[in-house]
Image (cartoon, rainbow, N blue to C red; front, side, top):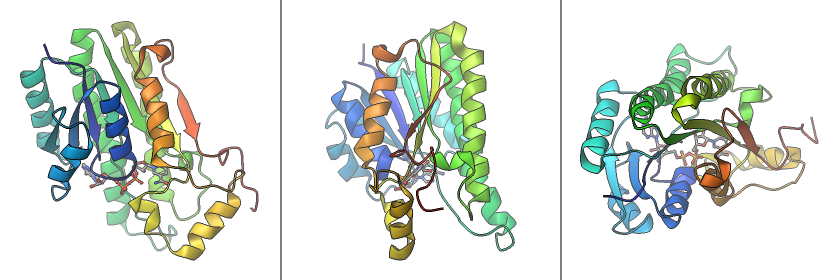
Length: 247
Ligand SMILES: NC(=O)c1ccc[n+]([C@@H]2O[C@H](COP(=O)([O-])OP(=O)(O)OC[C@H]3O[C@@H](n4cnc5c(N)ncnc54)[C@H](O)[C@@H]3O)[C@@H](O)[C@H]2O)c1
């Protein structure tokens, strides 16, 4: 019998990589899911040596997602945890945003997460255990200009999380979301310095979060300590969801 199995999407870098590392320390075998194959070997050494496997899967491709779950269930016979972390941004004011950039962001962030949840639900409902964690964003609250596509996708994830908690609760499957604020990752490092400074200024705590801040909360939500928590959106954002201190 294998130890507990956790699938983590977008685990090659950023927040997903930290989640993978943390859950590996917590004793899970990690299925590292990503479209980025270049860093895959290195990542296996970082995330749970001898305790992880890389699987290339584009979460917006239904065939890839089906193959992923078939492989995991046939090989390991169980799926304890799914962390839907993979996500992208394509920011612009709505009058300049292309339909392609809207579709792309909603496809990856929302439809991809929905497809991952659907396959997880089929298995977890049957096995009568499981925990799904969806990584949303503090932006779901709708207080970022230039993110109409991203906000729509993340607000969708919040709604999806709540409905799935209702649908799966009686099968002993908990579904929660974590909504990160400003976190230091390759995604935010790509932002212009001026934008980053302004974002930090707006933070009540005047700090950028670390990927480990998110991983710690995920670790709690997949542990037995959180068994009575489902359908919740946990903001991990240095207080930014309360409001901005400059706007
Ligand atoms: N960094 C932040 O400040 C922040 C804030 C709020 C929410 N988030 C959310 O946290 C999550 C991770 O963000 P990050 O900053 O670590 O991003 P990142 O860009 O550093 O890493 C994202 C990973 O997802 C993978 N990925 C992208 N599209 C994919 C697809 N279609 N299928 C499979 N894998 C795919 C990428 O290859 C990459 O490894 C995202 O959902 C993001 O929206 C991040």
